[in-house]
Image 1 (cartoon, rainbow, N blue to C red):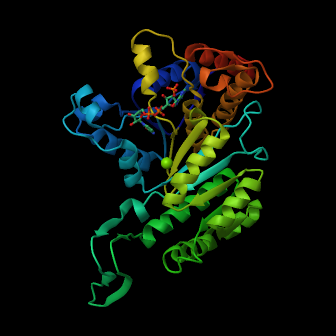
Image 2 (cartoon, helix red, strand yellow; image 1 turned 30 degrees about the vertical axis):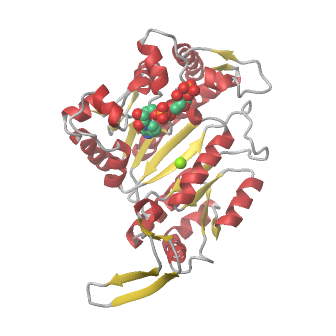
Image 3 (cartoon, rainbow, N blue to C red; image 1 turned 180 degrees about the horizontal axis):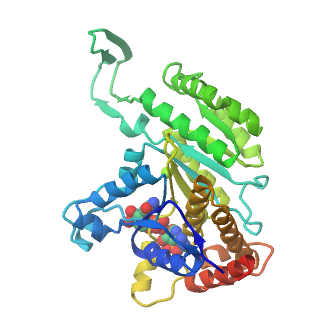
Amino acid sequence: MEKIKMVTPLVEMDGDEMTRILWKMIKDELINPFVDLKAEYYDLGLVKRDETNDQITKDAAEATKKYGVAVKCATITPNAQRMTEYKLHEMWKSPNGTIRSILDGTVFRTPITIPSIKPVVKNWEKPITIARHAYGDVYKSVEIRAEEEGTAKLVFEGKSGKKEEVVIHEFKGQGVIQGMHNTDKSIRSFAHSCFKFAIDTKQDLWFSTKDTISKKYDAQFRVIFDEVYQEYKQKFEELGLEYFYTLIDDAVARVIRSKGGYIWACKNYDGDVMSDMVSTAFGSLAMMTSVLVSPDGNYEYEAAHGTVTRHYYKYLKGEETSTNPMATIFAWSGALRKRGELDGIKELVNFADQLEGACFDTLNEGIATKDLVNLMEGITPKAVNSADFIGAIRQRLEKRLGC
Ligand code: NAP
Ligand code: MG
């Protein structure tokens, strides 16, 4: 078979630990034999980030803005223990945070579902994608512990000199106070990313806040979403898609009763909590994919899980590991499909479909990594190590591609 040609390079961001090992295996076995991979490579492994004073992360994000599509391996976010382990010059910030702030995007998390792993909610037939607004609210809030009786006020001093002041509470004793904010700009970016992703994946979009209680703050989210929707309405109607707004409590009830197959956009805190709930209910962190979509239409695909440190330490000792590469493979297929769509390369889009198909064939035949074996029902699964699992996928991929 002749290798599939690419036109525009894919931004490739390598990473750390066990996922770095899987990364190479996936490229060697599942990508390079079939695709004449055109990639601009950025090593976001912690060693290189430290060597370059983290410039490499910023360069990788800028390249994503330039080319439009990136695929990223999981990376270590350093903490005190990592400072010693890697003899770091500085406690570098989370690469995902750095990339997100440069691309100004929203993260969409979608579970990979298979018939033998039943979601805890038995009527969920299709994946539910959570879109979490990743700026502001309680995550950028300031707080005061009121130690005594007194008055708490919310004050805004405009640049024009205009001043607004409201009393939060007249404390009769001790208590707590919190001040938080968001910006129209960030909410608008969030809305654009959500509508774009809904159109891309041809799924309905749900958005929920608590605007009956929060009549200015949450209401502003709703107003901006309604405004931005006007730009996408025609496309939604053409595709037969629906956008609807509902209260967060109503959304929760609807989600539980639903069949799945839509995007649920949430404010920052709601998204934090609901994404953990939805992913747990679908089965496994190792089966959760993630894509960062920027408001101007750039995409960065990755797995939702981390570098799987515990498995890496076993690997270093020469022990066999059975780490699940599914979410990382789907990051590659997602990125290649998007690249194919943008460049009009049908073969590349088809390759992405066949690669995912081969993963499903493998799992549906009961060949799986250890983490999934205990979750599978209705088949007798066989646990294999990562290399054998990827090998089994390759066999099925070759069959599908007729090699
Ligand atoms: P983790 O790497 O997601 O792993 C936590 C545990 O979940 C693993 O020990 C393993 O459980 C299970 N697991 C996760 N992915 C798996 C897979 N593909 N196959 C099989 N089992 C899997 O989280 P962590 O241990 O908290 O974090 C490790 C490092 O990753 C940290 O340095 C953190 O900063 C980084 N991190 C990076 C990202 C990112 O780049 N997007 C995200 C999160 C964390 P068992 O050990 O029980 O088998
Ligand atoms: Mg959380």
